[in-house]
Amino acid sequence: MADDFIFEQDGRRSLVALVLGVVWAVLAAAWLWMEAALWIVALLGAFTLPALRDLIRNPSAGLTLTDRDLTWHTGRYEGALDLSEVQHMRLDTRLDFSVRATAVLKSGRKIRLPFEATPPHRAFETALEARGLRVKRFHFQLMQ
Image (cartoon, rainbow, N blue to C red; front, side):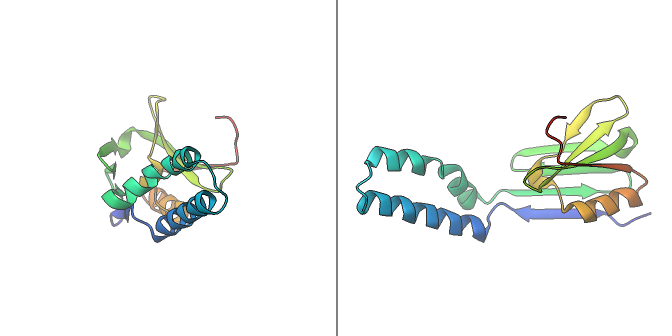
């Protein structure tokens, strides 16, 4: 019987605040010194609004793996799986080196875990294997 594996993280990150500040400074410089059209600056600035919303709201995300089930939450969404339904877990390394986790059920259905709720892959893989789940790793596939 393994201890519960718990992963939690906040949506607020200092790197996001830094990047937002830099983007806004570049947009302000383009508007003030390069005389960029205000509508272009505003249009480009609109793409930063989702990141600003996450900084303000600070949504939490997390995952809990017990000996019987796997539960996760991200923002307003929640999910749960009974481990007896899981045939194997698939961990895909993407081209940007992020790892996406997918539960492949015995029925053939695939449930992709939200990226925000996915823990660091090495610790997650170890916790899954400690509970007797088979883990398949795939690296850099363009098509699934």
